Amino acid sequence: MKRLKIALCFVFFFTLAICSAYGGQSEIRILHVNDFHGFAEPYKPLGSDEMLGGIAYLAGKVDELRKEKPSLLFSAGDMIQGNNWANLSQGESVIELMNEMGFDAMVLGNHEFDFGQDVLRKRISEAKFPVLGANVEGLGNLKPYIIKNLKGVKVGIIGVVTEDVPISTHPRNVAGLKFMSPIDTVEKYIAELKNKADLIIILSHIGYPVDRILAERVKGIDVIVGGHSHTKIEKPVKVRNTIIVQAWEHAKVLGVLDLTVEDGKIIGFEGRLEEIKPKIGKEDKAAFTIVEKYKQKVNAVLNERVGEAEVDLDGENVRRRETNLGNLIADIMRHASGADVTIINGGGIRTSIKKGEIRVKDIYSVSPFDNYIVAIKLTGKQIREALEYGVSAVEEEEGRFPQVSGLSFKYSPSTKRGSRVQEVLIAGKPIDPDQEYIVATNDFLAAGGDGYKAFGEAIKTSKDFSIIGGMMKGEKLAYSDSGRWLRDVVVDYLKEMRRIAPKVESRIIEVH
Amino acid sequence: MKMKVYVNHIPVDVLPGMKVKHALMKVGLLKEIEGSKKVYDEWGNEVGLDGALSEGMKIYIRTMNNE
Image 1: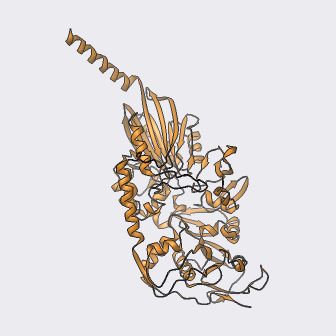
Image 2 (image 1 turned 60 degrees about the vertical axis):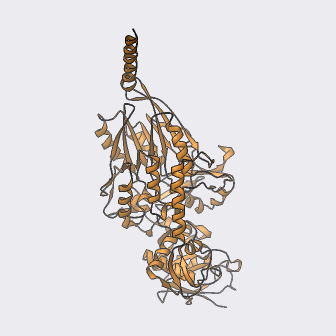
Image 3 (image 1 turned 90 degrees about the vertical axis):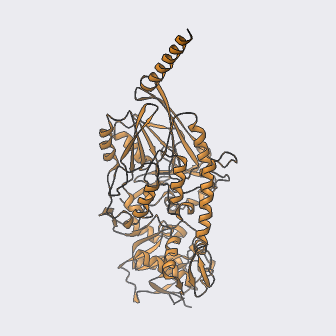
């Protein structure tokens, strides 16, 4: 009798297991992050009094939620570049962390290309999870898709990145690579996965507005786990038959999507964003250890000696006159971008450096902002207007006062505002008001920061931009490297030059 | 590839690769975010300042109370 009972129990549980796997319902969970950008530590976002984020706390939440249901952990891209914690190891810290957290897959974001292809290949080879990029040709070790079997449910996961990558990073980072239409690519691979997977999930780094278009145009997508637009989708959105989720940015939330699946179809779903805050005891210990380890490495890099100044570098007077530090930075920007001239705002230079050894942290103090170099074609007239605006508030020592390279000019501070600039020379010749010159600046001024309008007007009048042979070409845009902060360009220059002695050399002459 | 976006219905031309914060800067509204205001897309989702822009995207700055 006892044997019979055991046999009946065995048959019952075996049948239950079979039904659960093949005929019954399955509950599965998708955990997701996007646009982490190396923000490993909690921080106070602009306009907030509260500390948010902290990847060790997010990892702790992942541990907790994984215990409840069979889960997959995904990243929708832009993980390895942004914050110093990631940048100073070129993303190695992030991959080590993701390995520890047991990610199931990630898609490349546009900023994954910012350290160049060699570094990216190395990062991909270090990853213990598949890195997807179905619409990227030429990188080698990428996968277009994977299939995961979760509690009997076969989940096909396709990864696509924005085809705008070549216009958001330095051209050398994408040389030889081809970025195809995400929509066409998804259509192609859905057809391939049709008979291999029960569910189709797209890991997308194309931005929420384009995710919606993707969902409207392409049939057969069950879920889009998105990134790129840093959108905080509090509750999953359904467009036609596709569920779209995205989890904001910087590990400030963890996306949770619970799916009920029956006979290979989603019959129910529920999703939310779990807010991540630093709570002692809630962190994942292994993740916390990795965060601390790389914090120490960041400190070591910041203390690294990169060169020597043979003179004091003046960052104090950048809002009222030409200084040697202003000249140095303007020269580096002109050199890096291949521009004819540079115009930057003195207010972007925050401190001086004493004669003697220069460490990375000194440069980071001089240029603490996440600014990057752009170069735009301006007419001589527009350059003159920019300089005129730049000297228009010298009395108040406002940040708009220019520091320049490749040009010199005279101005009279005692003349009324708007007509102070006199002679302007470019490469030793009088400026031609109708000729176009390539002007390097930072993205802050290009976007109209400190009230500069000349760059914005040039952008406004520009015809279309296009990508030709992997290079961005535009009527007015000559250079843009949004993935590399200006401070890092300066550090690299100093590492190459070792000893510097910039001078004040009559680029900006005050006359009365 | 030239990009036009709209901030509180104001058209703004931005360079490819520029982000939400650049669009706000162009219309002089970045400082608003230091207070109680946040940025939302046309579907009412909050977006981060480093969020990517796309052609024709509409973003709005408003206080959290208006959500």
